[in-house]
Length: 243
Image 1 (cartoon, one colour):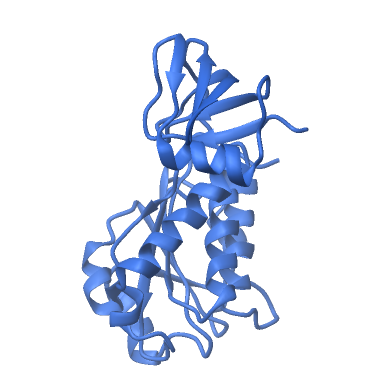
Image 2 (tube, one colour):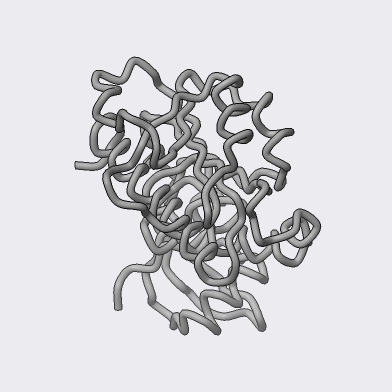
């Protein structure tokens, strides 16, 4: 069985560690770990520690843990992805892939053509599910950082808060693409993408007024969940930690 990479909110000193109930349930009931199973715990702050299942105490797993150590998987390029919320599984897929590609902050948005109402995006049950997807993506990709999930905002409220060194917004009508940025003289990037149907003309104008540079992804129109992933892969390959 592959070595399990498991999130827990706290790491313990070397020795015996009774895993919290939620993490124990995931380890014992979902992953079906048994006595002797080796795993790695991480707390989302760049640290992790080796562990082994010693026994199950009721509903909780008793682990033998080693000293924690630093293995920070954060990209040197700090990327914030700001994207209007999509319907159904496409949004879940976008969250997962953005986490795998090293996004450090995700800002859900509501724009003119967005099909998900802001009140629905702010539903606590929905936000909890999104956080769970981001944690699961970190576990699957062996990351030691959890993507920061911001409160969903209207686009007009978000734009004045965008303060990354480089701010990019994608539109098919733009003349230049990501290659025009080389070399990249920035350590942080704000990436704004649109919903199905794109951002409205007035929204693109507002983004440019807020310091966003208008770029295109390529000669073909990409779906709302594809465009940010393609852009993230290019940014990380060119100036981050992929490749």
